Amino acid sequence: MSKRPSIAIESADLHVLRHHIYEYRKGVRNLVLHTMNSFDREDAEILLNNKEICYYIHKVNDRKVNIFMGNPSCVEVIKSFGDISLSDYSPEQDFILGVMLGYNSNVQCERYLQRKEKTEYPIRSCISHSL
Image (cartoon, rainbow, N blue to C red; front, side, top):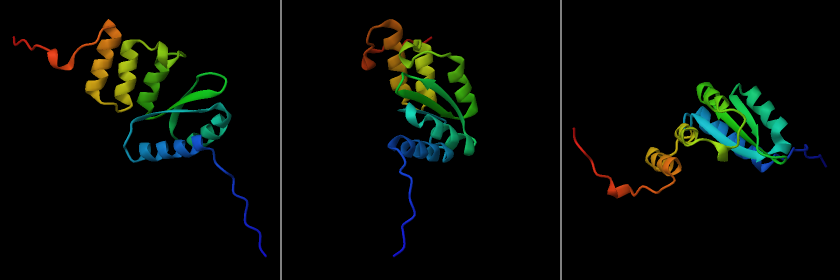
């Protein structure tokens, strides 16, 4: 009777990261934000370095990290924001991040206005003025 080779079990976080890498490589995304358990950080860095993918890791807390990965220019923009929490991003930084992540631009505009003015802007009440 032969033994089965031992197979290392990959965490769900690393499995999802591999899927994000696939999407980035296929051009589905320019930038990916992946939040994962900090326990897997070293394995994630090895994977991204081996695949030669640009990334930036931000510590969320003792248990979680955010990994921004993808287009080097996009990653550099995120790095330029400094070491601050996503919840502390300015409305402009939040807008830029959303656009780079590929979120719906109309929704991002609404979100920006809400965060900037701290009021809701009804979508259909906009009055257009011609010059």
